[in-house]
Length: 258
Image 1 (tube, rainbow, N blue to C red):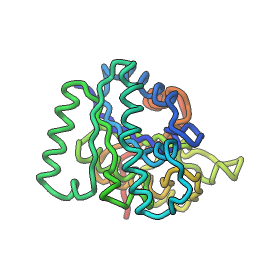
Image 2: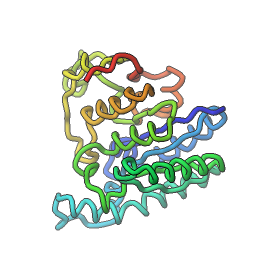
Image 3: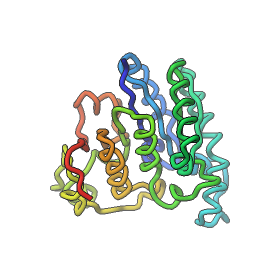
């Protein structure tokens, strides 16, 4: 039986360090899905709707408030899915969009319906692409960049692993962007021992940060599910992470102290 992996793609990964969605990065993801398909079923949790909208609209006059971000998400989400569809179709990959809110994880009937829908899509070799329905929900617009959503999807689907593709190799003992001697922490089982290493920075695009990644890890570890953080900027980042060929941080079920 194939393992089930939830891959959360952050805005920084999707834009490849630019101010627009990178088709090249989505092609990189498509190649990896093809390479892994015999061993893994992949569920994508994708950010990037607002970044996509900024490619198509003049954002002057749009205030940096939740209502404007909701509107931009409504503009960008279908265009983002169009890009996914066009690129993945070139590789023979079928996709399906699933928009969710946190209420879907709190309602038992919604949980069952979500599980059944995603399992049916996977059975027919569709790649589910999940995003929060930002036009009716606001939390991920403020903080998170879908990290927690990825964790909730992982636990709901009882997946084998959550992989967060970010703009950093993993958790460091210092901020590697400001400290050249920062050391990567390759394995974590007790979150309390490393939480003091969190140092946030704003990259101007996504809303994610190490705090939201630790919250996602907390969700996964509480259900004995492994989580990894890897640098999505690297080519073949998912395959290399799964085969231990690239630096990354593993959060392994063990001691979870709250």
